[in-house]
Length: 294
Image (cartoon, rainbow, N blue to C red; front, top):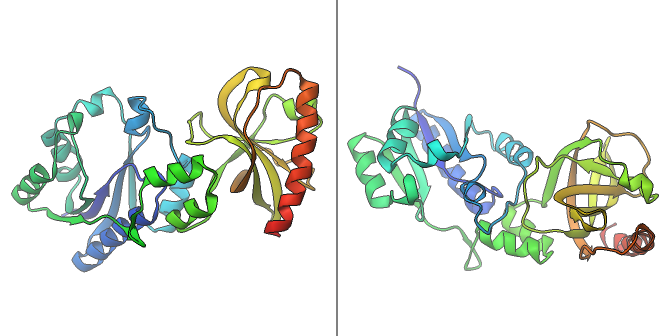
């Protein structure tokens, strides 16, 4: 007989302290019942598929890195598409829990499943009992009376409150990706940048920031342009980092940028010359801000 799973299901955007508490319960149940651990998650997220007014916190690469660190045995990333979202709650339960040999399921108290989120905890409890799957429903995770949620973290990030966001995450807030060739716009304005692949997804904040990264075990501060490039009529979200006191080729390397504080909002300048003047001001401001974080 194949080994069973202790599992949980969700977006896990942020993999914040509340998510980690859920996963700790999954691991505890797995150890107690001689099961493997499993997380079922989605890519794209449902809110991306339906194009709701909500943006993501984590890149897929960072999510994978964090799950690896949490030592989950199996992470099943389900493609959220029209076929998947059309499944009834009962169909989802059979296809992804019963047929996948889930023996212990742990979810939060706001868990919904199936087409139009019609499956609720009452139905889930009934289905689990019929299939002899142990169900645990976990209360909200709170610190100092405040519920830790992805919504709260998005609010912190959009207000450049990175310290508060990191407190909810239990780690510094970073975005990681591979350094790729861009359009060489940085060289055109005498400010070379590392263009970081973020898989064409939209994040919940944008602007110009002071960040920090590590290359070959050496820490560097950087000026991060995160979002569109309106001066060049490019409105896709992108991540570019001008790394201070650094001039090596790092194409194809994975780079993680830790966000420290905001320098300014993004602005559409009337000319490249105006942008160059502003970038020099950004560099001066960044060097002053660095003193706070050294």
